[in-house]
Image 1 (cartoon, rainbow, N blue to C red):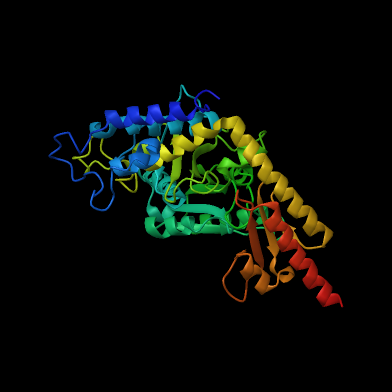
Image 2: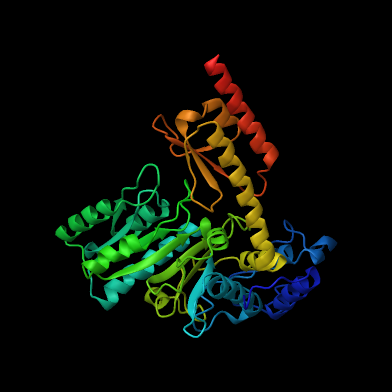
Length: 416
């Protein structure tokens, strides 16, 4: 790891205070032109002594606006200090975690969540096909499994390009090759020529990881132009540490971009996603009309809080890659324990090897137990077939033991 390092509390505090000192200070600096200010001090007091010991909260109060993309051209000079913190985070993610080539470079930003980051990717590639291939919107389609996150059909709706959902195997959750071929043939007959592939690194419901080669081999067989985006919003901070020998990263020349959420496994404040892509792609969504923004804008959201970037930076430098690996390993051990108990009870479930989501077939779970333990159903209606358990940090063995014991007691009642 070149950029992702563990730091002491004092080192983290000094780095963030340095960044804030390089930003505009709405309390002391003459700043007449910005439609922004510090948070209202009548509501958000800035005098508390504890804030000096909590640099992330201090950043929240200072209210830096990270509008724009700070890996591309120039950015608003007033917030240069915390923008550099964001660039440091993106290097940790793109170069250290997902193995981007530093010499070739990358672009990206801290987004308000994985939904926007996925839509950003589809927007970039739709515009790429429009600009570089003179494509028509009706000639472009998104391909992704039926288990993919709802942000993908949302992107389809917003950007007015068709979404082709691929059927998955009920038990393995893997996209079916025959479904990819069938959907592709149908799409070609309907005039589709350009394709945006979204492969999952941990689906929301199952934690399943797609093999992107299933898609790319077939598209290359037909010699069709495509761009490949990896949705790692859930699994991005788990899978690379669990399955270290994988090519779902930038060492794979077919991968163009990647989304990862910090507000899931990383436990950053909600509204914290990350989008990274290869150099030469994000310029397809440059908004030239944003002339009052230094460096213009290349993001879907525009203005966003710099405090989120500082929060991600603080979490990553608190752990460092080795302590993070230990944390994920503990969650995997708990997941293994749960799976062993389910096996002993002959309960059918899905678990992607090395991931920390266990999704149980609904027929084995009483609704009262599901409600008591806040299991998440695949569908909130009579057709629900699955309940999922996510082994987050707060889910300890004691919780899992209680859950298993209640299932055992119910089985005994049923057989008595």
